[in-house]
Amino acid sequence: MMVKRFLAVTATAITMAGAAIAAPVSFTLDAFVTSNFNASTGLQETNFVDPDNPAGTLSLSYDTDDVFFSFVFFDGLNLNPTSFDLSLTLGGVSQTWSQPEFLFAFAIADEATGTELEEAGFFLATSDASASLADPNIIGIAPDLFSFGGEFMRFDEFGAAVGINLEISSIEPLDDLPTPVPVPGSLPLLLTGAFAVVALRRRNKKS
Image 1 (cartoon, rainbow, N blue to C red):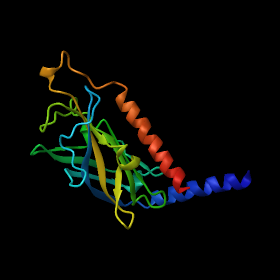
Image 2 (cartoon, helix red, strand yellow; image 1 turned 120 degrees about the vertical axis):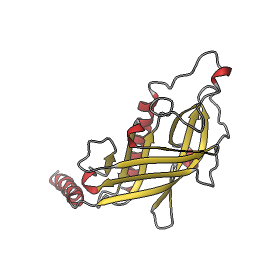
Image 3 (cartoon, rainbow, N blue to C red; image 1 turned 90 degrees about the horizontal axis):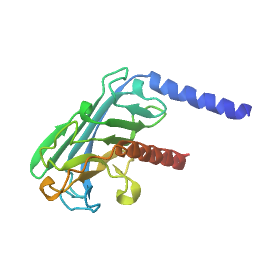
Image 4 (spheres, rainbow, N blue to C red; image 1 turned 90 degrees about the vertical axis):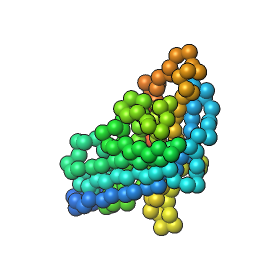
């Protein structure tokens, strides 16, 4: 029992010591559209999907002072400035969404220093906070949790995060529908839970 308690205290001390050495870090990941889910038909579409060529970039920056137990949340309540931006070119139209437009966004970094990016999660409700210029029927953009066997991040041979797979949720043109299909109120909660499960599963694998 004493050994377990000592290990827990030591792990906490190391985590806090790593975060105490504040350092700004930033990342730019290639963003690939690997899935386009049609919320009205329940089917996959091919619009914008190109798993081999990036459709844009996901850029994020934070300070290691704001990493707590490997998590950093981009919510504006951190000690230091943070940024989270998604830039995509869809259908020949370019658009950038910035941190305040995301329903939620977070990153998972290494526990030792907080400088190595391991995951990035977010949900962007484009029909609500920000209209999509590329296609007004896009209702949400998020990491594609089920692409490539559930691994939505891409890493190079050195283990550095270099890309992220995206899923675009869309609806059919409103003229073809009797009534507009709203984004389910439980969708953000479902995605949050899914991200948490993926994060915990990855941490359990490493341990």
